Image (cartoon, rainbow, N blue to C red; front, side, top):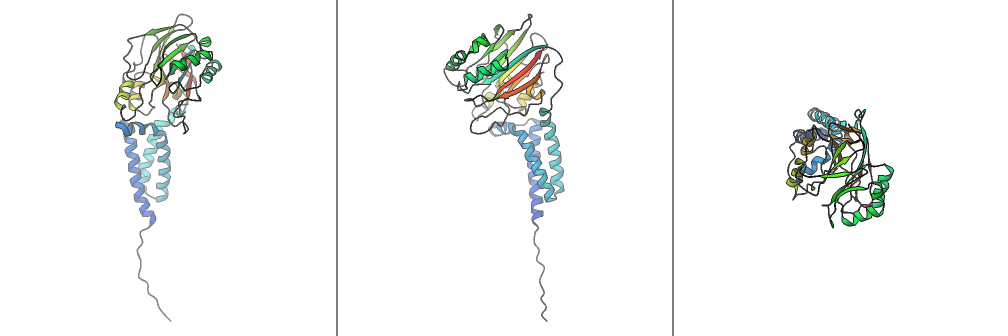
Length: 325
């Protein structure tokens, strides 16, 4: 008989290493959530990244499942708190609120034409199909204005206040079914052209529409982008009801945008349960983030919103069926 004696070999379990890694990942998620909760995004990296908060929430759920597998109580506890916080921040956008019970109908469409490249016929067909009363347009060029007219926009919306440009993103304008009067001095735009029009609704009432288009928060213009949103006019308590519509280049997760909402505005898409519907980009990738918005003050609200693709544009058009008191 031969007796074999083996010395015990100590092997570090894989799950122990996974548990330590899970804690590190959980701390990273906690830091990102704290940044979003505190509105601490700043600089060329964090400002764009905060746009992806809804996806950050999905990633946190995956990380939570991995923490359960790794049997790391600390990581599970941290990630549970993270997921609860992110759900509290994001999920209300997918839940429709109580629609306004009364008010004068106002059907509004906003679209960014991507330097005039958006298909004018598709835009006009949308205006006709949706029976639009007011059309807020960004990145309007002279050639795009001519194509819109040739496609029949002026027959549907005969009144306009437009500031087209030869090329690029600077041009913008507003078209309406009802008479328009341009307002000046309401605020000092920082960014592209942002005209303000007072729309005379039937019955003598009026509503104010601001075409919004600050610059994008690319590395060289983050400060200008923030100033462009911060200088937008706050929600008024008297005078004509005010609507802001356009490409804000900001999501509901940007602190400067939330401050604007805090003055008394409501995001129409979020109020109708479509606040997570992405509107940009439409090139090469599917749309990922929601940067096109319609905001109403306390005397107006949305009963329905819908996003539509515009061939040639990198943005989806946003339609809002509003009721204005």
